[in-house]
Image 1: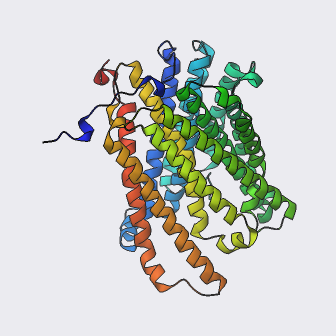
Image 2 (image 1 turned 120 degrees about the horizontal axis):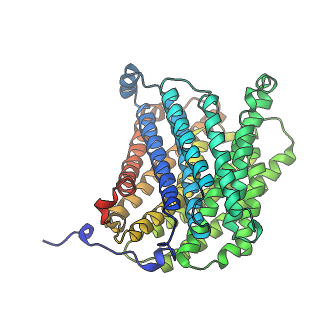
Image 3 (image 1 turned 45 degrees about the vertical axis):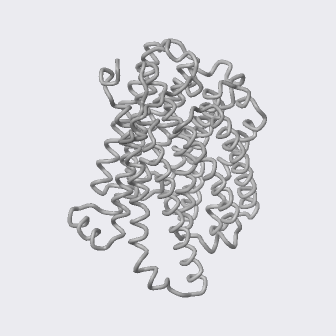
Length: 475
């Protein structure tokens, strides 16, 4: 018999790993690991809610779920809330990995702030999940949970902000661009999180037009804040793998930072074409949004090419995830240009085309970059322990990455096709065709379950590595 590909261990060579990673304060290592674990657990919760939400589209299964007390109204906010938590926590894990590079031993005050932050967020996460399961939600986009849980979230973030600037505040302007991206992203989150609660003011809530404008403006800034965390993570892992910091000081990197910063304030405009607002706001939003994604496409392309030339072969998960991000960025660029044309935007607004675009950006760019970063950090953790996470170098892991991309392509492709048919029929004053109504649920569920199957395998592999006891991995 021929030995299977999975049985061939492939050791990760030095180019994958950061330099000087052995002599680091154990508390800082544990902080990085803690936020990685939180990120992966959040994604697992989001995936579980997403799978149940997809199954809800099948009438026979939906009726069973309803009898069990599982409501779609609860599943969607769980899915979106914990998907956003995955991105934020993944970005914070990368920031803590950078702290390992530049900060010394963790002081007592910083350690206490970190502990309280983790406790606050654990309370918030458990409370949000439990309350949403019992049908207690706000009805807001991305903040569908009861606002009482916003208090521990914000307090925890303020403690993280305190630690961040206590470590990096001095000489911040002279550090690489990814540090500037993280610094602004951290402050943006505080600003946008507070602004997203403006609906609690009676004057705002009483005016639906003002409420919608503020909700989309704050949501746009929220996306901008986690985009800056992800962009910084992208540049950082590129620097660590290639061992060349020049890209982090390049004009192109700072151009991405600049337009990302502007886009954080303006990108809500192309979501509110249907609202009464100055046309100049729409044009500024359109131009800056297109500039950001063009520069992002170039940065992702460059970093993916650099990593490809440095990663060992076969197969390197970092290389595969960044290559996926590269092609997804190109797709998002093309569709963003089309969707931002006002007549086309009016045609597809309110259809699943918008959902497909948002999922493509969040999964194809943000998630793929963070998957690459998490894979790199896991490889490094195991290198410290004198062993290799061989599952990451296996051919089956490669197949899971490819299968996940294929499943997401099918899901987003169907959402786009279904939405376009709905948009055209609606424009002509016609109902959706009967064949679409009868088959849509099953196609959507099938595509979603395929993507979920492969992502689930990736999550199981990461969880097995991140939650393994040291004695079971060679130390």
